[in-house]
Amino acid sequence: MSELVTIDLDGPIGFREPTGAVLAAHGVDIKLRGTDARITFRVAPDDYAHIHDVALFQIVGEPEVPFDPELPFEIEAQLRADVVAALLADDDPAQRLVTSLAEGTMPTESWLALSVVQPMEPGLQSGFRIERN
Image (tube, rainbow, N blue to C red; front, side, top):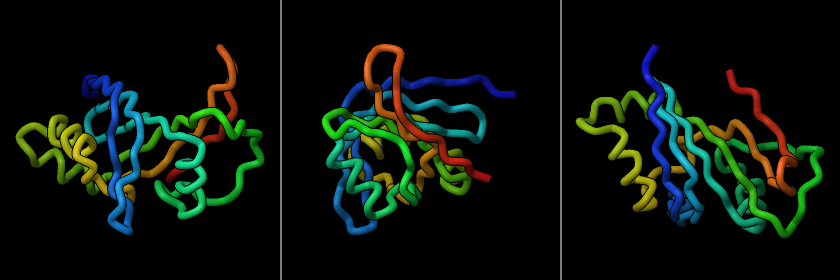
């Protein structure tokens, strides 16, 4: 088993939408272990509504979860295996991933959402997980 590498982002990142627009987000962290790469990021409520409406990060369906329209959303997503394989061919895959997020060139289609949560108050959050095969 490979060692877990966590990269703290704590800053602005972007994802390239299929339309070519850049979806702005606040990066929390990236976790890398072997061929598994995950990111946690936050978006404003209006941006989450857009993500949901156009099924970015393969978020589909209407969850029966109460959300506060004023609070940000936190999304955890996993990088698709084929994209990870391409990154691993790079001399510094972690740096390449961070750079593509900082520049807003990483496509939203490269990521599969695993969970969407909304912190409500300390110790309490509302959200859902998405089962992936």
